Length: 113
Image (cartoon, rainbow, N blue to C red; front, side):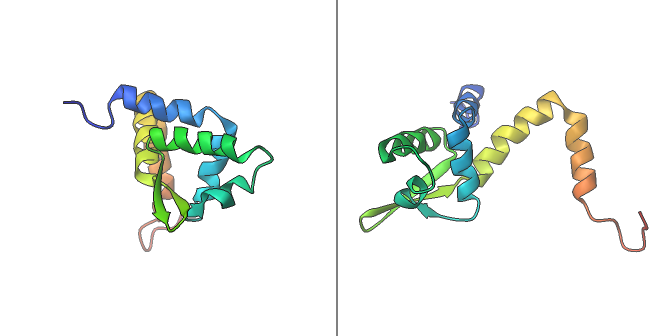
């Protein structure tokens, strides 16, 4: 049995990321959980269109949903997004990943940079 992060599964994440509306939804969710109506109110397209975008993101595993009474609340699946993009970046430009990790780490105490 293949893992949930198999290449075909990762392809669904990249297909979902190909659309600017879906990328904006992910950015909006970075601040925390949002109701479907709150997400739709941020766009000038119809609520059913936003619902379809949310379905694509959910199908790709990039968002999760939960019901709260009559509302559906969406959250960013940070780990899934990071794994898909990170695995791709590690394969394509591993030197950049090393550089990025080096820049993010704080300097050891007493080490002037």
